[in-house]
Image 1 (cartoon, rainbow, N blue to C red):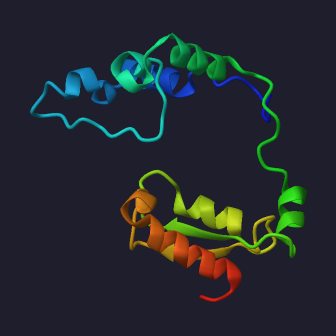
Image 2: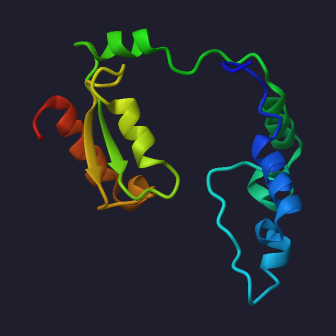
Length: 155
């Protein structure tokens, strides 16, 4: 259903559909061509990862990945009333939102954090100082700033 269901390797299935309809999405073709760019895919999991990446290989990881792809009894991810209750005095929160993030749509983040939403008490740092890899690039600096924002020491 719309709130719960198995992913069934959704990124992999979508990729295969794109390749059938447009060869520019087929990395096997584009990586061999000087005339076609290899398109970027980010934050997706494909069935073949366990075969291509040693860190993910092995029966245990493959079994785990397949089990997650087949799991269909997921509970609701965001429960607005619970988030709102936690942020009303009990929990202080801040977020780093990267304006030109390759992986996260800025407008969708702003929609989630807008006034009147369950997360409207989150203090937001909108920046292009870092990108999606911000925690890897300057984790201590980012966490220090976010902690100070959550405590109200930095605006």
